[in-house]
Length: 532
Image 1 (cartoon, rainbow, N blue to C red):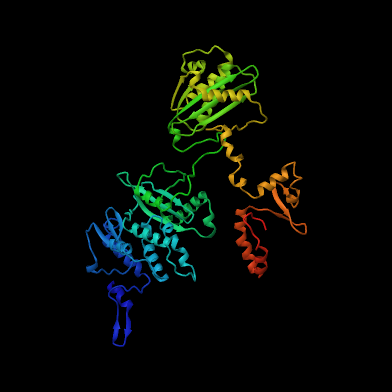
Image 2: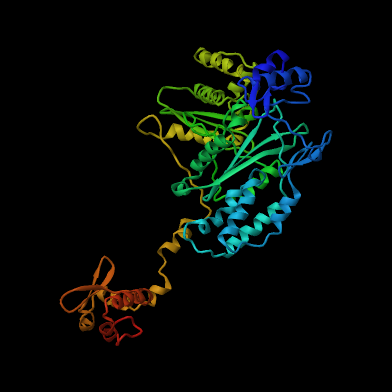
């Protein structure tokens, strides 16, 4: 303290009066004075080699290490490549014996919780233990629990190295879910282009969440990840696109997906509904697309067909009907312009056009001059569209090489319908309909052996006088056989197999009603025909 201020801190004790020679932390401005002093001392080293904090600094030389490239800190191994779990800690979990009590199970899960950011899909693996943690639940270590326990121990032997995010590089968030849990991984590519994990998060689904659809679970996983990893979201600009990876590019993603096996082959796409109503996947617009077109005109109607496709992707197919007078050349231009408009609307940049109209193709190339005034508006609009693509080429094809578009054009010109559009579904069959429907109308062998079959045949037969006594108590109602019991009650006749299924349930109910003796007496005459 300044000597002139030291006396102002004087205090009295039984053995004399004293004052501070250093500033005590009990004073209100002690913190600010301390911070100012530290800043003055380390101003040229701050934010580079050292950071100063307003607090007591006590350093134990036995616990300090300077100038090292790796070291243990709070149970983790910190090094230049990232952060690893302390091998002693992970190996202790890997050799643990299975829990035998609720306390041991909670202790085991507590050890896992401390290193949860290193474990892909932890909640999905430990969801098996959830029933054992409920109140007043008995501890029963099932086969499923043992398998989950061994799975966790196996994960402990290959825990990933997590890294700190590199400033200025984009982060990637991967989501995964199943009917028991949701999980997420935030990762980033290093300088070598290798994707490395930064943090894993996961949790089990609660109550109604387990009934969510796959899309709803994905949204829930995104919300949960944004809450748990909020500091990453706040520190970066981000955009959300739904994308299904075509290949697993890193071990970090493989580890996450391994804990969330897929339930079906459905997935979320960024399909854009609307006028095209077909496909528009992000990134496909930069690929080369092929457009095939054809127009058709007759004395009574006209139509057009276009096929727009990319190698390995779903095709966009359209058929148009023209309710206005149209020449054959005009129909070809209508098809050509419709295809160009759809390609431009989809954002396609590289287009290759194939058509069987020599006039349209040669005029687009500049090889033929325009002689028909009625085609001038079509040609002018076509030139406008052609200039909007980064690369554009057009070529002529024979009619037999353009069958798909030709069929769509013919379909549009021949059919008549009300309204602005009509959907037509074309189904592919690999066998005759006689073969596909045979099984539906085939009588099963079990029906031929049914004890009711002869009685049904006699009821349907026109010559029943000889067997009238046998069938007088039976009747057919909606194809089912009924027998009239004493008192006029109709009882449905059942097969022997159905009787065997219903008999135990009937006996159980009658036992509960304390009528077993009467029931036994009534069924004492049961025979193999299924009748009493």
